[in-house]
Image (cartoon, rainbow, N blue to C red):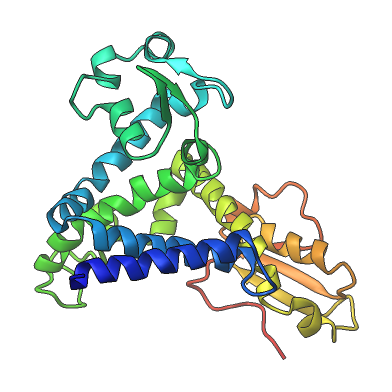
Length: 300
């Protein structure tokens, strides 16, 4: 057996081991770490088996998939396809008003063909599509995060090499005074947060994206002993937590819900426009604050 074959065999054995650990836990890895281990080993197996040139081409075309996801989101494709059942291409064309050749075009990588080829949606019959887990995530929980990355962050990524050339690969601002690739891509000398304040639609999307990230953060509460560390608080007036850049307070709300016996104040700081959107704070105090400015809350 040549080295590549033996390497693949070893990874296959590791995939089987990781899969068994996930499916049949015996008091070892928790579900999250076990799942991440299986995914990491499976990705190593894919890299070992894949032709290097094909892998390089796949990386090169990732930005096209992101652009198609954004276009399909704008067209409402993720919402139009029923969560259970399926929808034909002809129905999608009728409901979106898009040209048939734009959504699907023979052997060309048009919208639905590209998505199904990369695991987003399932083509259950010829030109008939159904949701799968990935398409439901793209049109649901991940929607606003992906939108934020595509508009605010991807532009900076594409401009990054150009920006570095303009600074002669230094950390100083470029000749026009832009101090980082994001400001350069957005065409502003202000921070991205200040820029967002001038773009109401983008600010709303950003806050919704942060809400999605906060929902993931709530699952990590078990990774830190909040209950034990904060149990010493014996006064309702004592400040226990200041969540800087805490959005609408979702993480602090989760801490209150998980540890209802904690005494003391919890403060959520964010930009004024974000804080003003908090309609019913549960167990915390919203505070408008720019984290680039001195911190007004002082610890003991």
